[in-house]
Length: 93
Image (cartoon, rainbow, N blue to C red; front, side, top):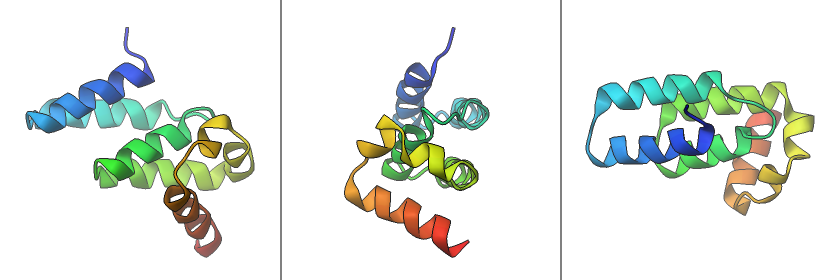
């Protein structure tokens, strides 16, 4: 059974060893598993490891659920630059 934390750990390994097929499957899994409670975490990971496709999906989800996401504990734990990026994205689009 795969959960968000395991998928993020596996994605990190898939990145490290350039296992592109696995990366794609994990990105799809994470994209379809976005929820209020994990959106900020998935955004943070995708930003830190340059997963642009996953980052765009996370940003779109966050925009659609902005009020709830910014009230989550995960959002409050984001580095300031990630918070600002999310806020600017949601205001500009």
